[in-house]
Image (cartoon, rainbow, N blue to C red; front, side, top):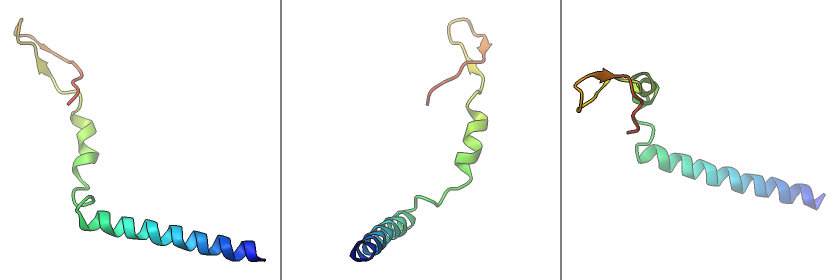
Length: 63
């Protein structure tokens, strides 16, 4: 029976720690921009102009 109380207390401590970290991340502005990450994947394959030949090519670039 004692192990159940220990597990309940441990789970409450972990839940409080995660809640504090969540509130801290919200206050620092981590979730302010929810639009840009969903659109960023659409513009990953933009046309990149090749400087040596002047031709446009479809290359993946790592930004």
